[in-house]
Length: 133
Image (tube, rainbow, N blue to C red; front, side):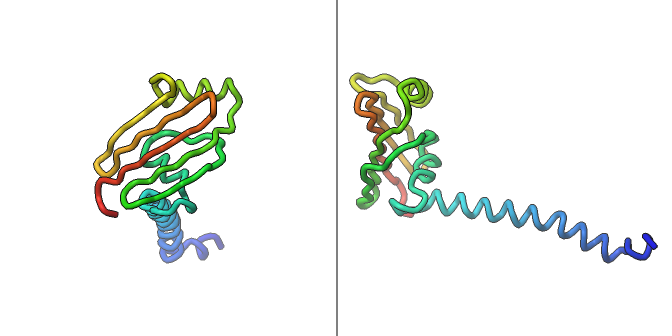
């Protein structure tokens, strides 16, 4: 009875589904990440876009403003972490540059600057897009 169920056709179908579905899922995930990375919208995927471009994890925040003018994105957030969490966060991603914590970096297509004012809890990003996207 079991022999009748296990045929070459069924095995091939099972193999193709077992291999095809994960490949389809991974392709979809890659396409989503690429879409987020190239997103030039201040609303959809804004935080994810900044995290991908800068490598800085953005904690719980409330957005103050976001504007995209030509090839510059300026974003300001209000950090919602408690004092202890804010100290750990600032030490992980920023360097002290009185009177605020700062970080900066560059990729082949983006130059960025970030600042964190722990007294006002303002987290600011400026992303400069070096290539037209």
